[in-house]
Image (cartoon, rainbow, N blue to C red):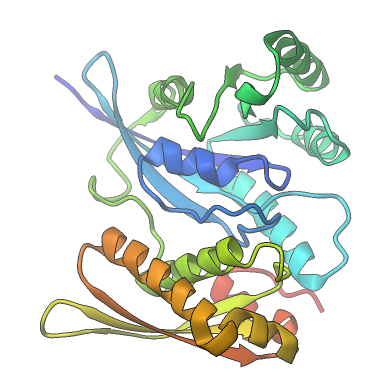
Length: 304
């Protein structure tokens, strides 16, 4: 007779290691936004994956996507994000360290390895973006990482292509603890719809204004109203620090914000499964990164 299992896996690593892309691939759905910008993930995001095992058991794995961990944190927001990553690591039954194959054991990665060495949790190594490095160099990187910190298992993956992702999911599912599922089977994240809308809009801002705009923007969902026809009216505000950044986000004649809204609306509608009427506003909020209420909303600690 088949049974059920459940497990929690924290996914950590340096900025832009591909953690969010990996979690999306493991879940098989978009649960975490992806950008070329460093520090795109600001708080812990949960993705929920289902997997059937050879013995007939079914496992539900909660993957915790965490902000990138880096050594030099100059701003309050950066300190809060790194603290959130380590709190996320404490929630997992297992910890997956994701390393960018091309960047190897950077100073940030070595610092993470040192801290992970003080923890007793089972740890898995995932070397991501393996298509960027010859196999001989990959094996040397794996050996060096395991010499610094012996891992339970090592996986070579390309999250964007899906290579090796199934092997990783099979393994963590096999290690899950027998017991009931923690969430309904069809659920892929614990993220509220308002937060999802904010994240999708923020992703599009980064995607379309990668060169022009710093990562220090915030998006807040001001309203989500379900209409009688099944659609939703969603209002989001994009907060920027300076007036010139507002002009960049708006674009000439409002063309850029319209493009951002159109793409975000299509993606949001696809995710929620019904039409979305998305209205975007851009506001100069010079001190948004020091607003305590926003940290609370994001689940981040606010240091004095």
